[in-house]
Amino acid sequence: MAQEVLPDPRSHSSRRGEDDAPQALLGDFIYEPEPEQILERLLPVYVETELYRALLESAASEQGARMTAMRNASKNAGELIDTLTLVDEPGPSGGDHPGDPGSGGRRRSAHAT
Image 1 (cartoon, rainbow, N blue to C red):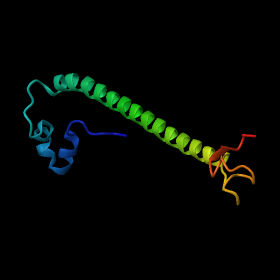
Image 2: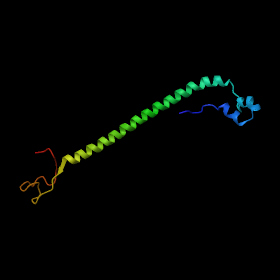
Image 3: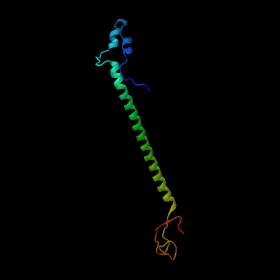
Image 4: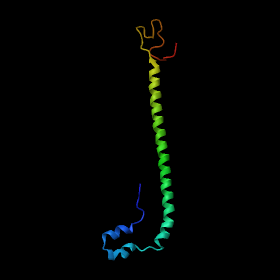
């Protein structure tokens, strides 16, 4: 992806006449220090900032992926618990089975005997 950092003096010369080309190269800006010196100082800072932005985006993406994975794991664990858990309905005597009045609709694990 190309991104314009400084104005391109060539784009100004194509819009103006050929006799204005030296003036177009100077542009409407007064540089102090020279443009090359400014670019020497700004370019490393720009590159460093872009790399830092990329690292921050990578870290944010990783955290988002972790959050999604944990949400899905929690949802799956809840579904697994619901699947493996039985709810006993009280029978005619109020318990699980005739003669067992004590349970009265308690939850019982599917692995319980």
